[in-house]
Image (cartoon, rainbow, N blue to C red; front, side):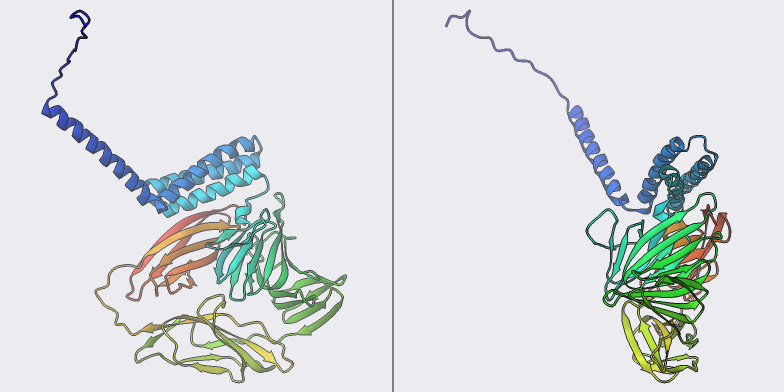
Amino acid sequence: MTQRERPQVLLDWATVSYRSIMRATVLVVLVAALGGLFYYLRASLRGSPEELALLDIGRAERLLREAGQAAGAEPARAASVGRADRLLKDARAAFGRRGFPEARAAALQSQAFSERIITGTGDESFAARIFRFEGDVKVKRASEFAWSSLSANAALKVGDQIKTSSNGSAQIIYFDGTITTIKPGSLVEIRELSEDPATRVRKVQEKVNWGGVSATTSDGNAEGSVHEVATASSTTRASSRAQFDVSFDAGSGRARTEVHSGTTEVQAAGTVHTLQPLDRLDVANGESVALASIPPSPGLLDPADSRVFLAVSGAPEVLLRWGAIDAAGRYRLQLSRTALFSGMVLDKPDVHSTSVRIPGLGEGTYYWRVAAIDAAGTESAFSEIRRFKVSPARVRTAEDRIPPALQLSEFLPSGHLLIINGRTEPGALLSIEGQAIDVYDDGTFTAVVRMKHEGNNEVTIVAQDSAGNENRQRRSVFVESF
C-alpha cells in the first residue's frame, strides 16, 4: 500500500469540565426523585377520600355534559340540569376547602340528577339499595347468570335477585320509603320500580320465591302509590304505612301474610282479602284460604335501650324482662350479637315466664327481642329490638379532651330518605337529627333518616365519647321528590 492509499485517522478532542458532569448528574438524580415522588403520591392517594371525591366530581362533570345535550328545551329536564349543575358546584367548593366526604356526597347527588335525564327512566341506582347485610348474602344481576357475594352496600335494579343463606340477612331500602328485611334462607327478586313523572305515583313490587321478608312501608307517597310483595300464589299490597310479613314455602306451595300494623290487601285464589292488624292469611297452592288471628307482640321492659353493664368483677348477669301477653302460653326469646339476628347467641322458644337472667356474657354489644306464642302454637311478631352493652370497668379520665372520630363514607338520598354509612369511635353514642343510631363494636354504623321536606335539608350528626367529648357535623342534602 502506497503512502497515498494509506487511510487517515482523524481525532476530534472535546473538553468536558467537572462542573458540567456534576450538573448533569444532579439533573438525572433530580428527575428520578421527582418521578419517584409522583408515583409515591399517586399510590398514597389511591382509594383515599381525596381521590374518590375527585373521581366522582369528574364523573359528575361528564354526566352533566351528556344530560345537557339530552335535556334539550324541555323545562322539567332543564330544571333537573340546573339542580345537577348546582350540586356539582357545591362539590367543587367542598373539594376546594378539603371537605372530601362532603364533596363526594354532592357529586353523587349531581350524578343522580344527570343520570335521570340521560336514561329518561329515573335514577335506578337509588330506586332500591341494600343498605345493611350480615352473613352470607349473594346477588344475581338481571343481565348475569352467576351469583356474586356482597362485599359492600349495593344498588338494585329490576330483575336483580338477592339470596340469603341460613346465616345471612339483608335489608333493602326502596325509593318509596319501604324498608324490607330479607330473612335467612330466602330468595327475593325485584319485579318493578316505577314512578309516574306527572303524578309521582310510585309502584314497587318484590317477589318472594322462597323464604320470607318483613316489610315496613311508608305513607309519604302520592295517593295511588303501592308497595307489593308477591309469591307464586298471593300478592300482598300496602298503600300506606304498614308493617307485615310475607313468607312462601316452595315445597308445599303455602304462602302466608301476617299484618302487625296498618292495613293490607291480599289477592289470592281469585279473591281480595283486607287484612287488619294481627290478622294472618294462609294460602295453599293458590286455592284454599284460611284467616286467623295472631297474638300481639310483647313490650320490652328491662334493661333500657342502649344500657351499659360494667364488668366490675367478671362477666355480669343481665336480667331481660318484658310485659305479659294474656293469650301467651310461652315466649320466644332471641339474643344476638348482630342487629339483623343472623348469628344467634340464644334462640329459646319455650320461655314460660316474662323474664330471663343471662349470666356470663362477654364484652360487646347484644341485641334482643321477644315473641309471644299462644296455646295453639301461633307466634306473634317479634317485639321492638333493644340493645345493651357489656363493657370493661374503666375509669373515665378527666384528661381526655379528644373528640371521637366521625367519618362518613356514604351520604346518599333515596327518595325522601337518606342513607348514611360511616365510622366513629367504638363505644361512642351517635345521634342523627336527634335519633339514636346503633354503633357496632368496630365503630361502624348505618342509618336511614327521613328528610323533613323537599329541596335542601340540613342534617346534624353528633358523636359523643364516654368522657363527654363531642364531634358534631352538619351536612346538606337536596331532596327532589317528597
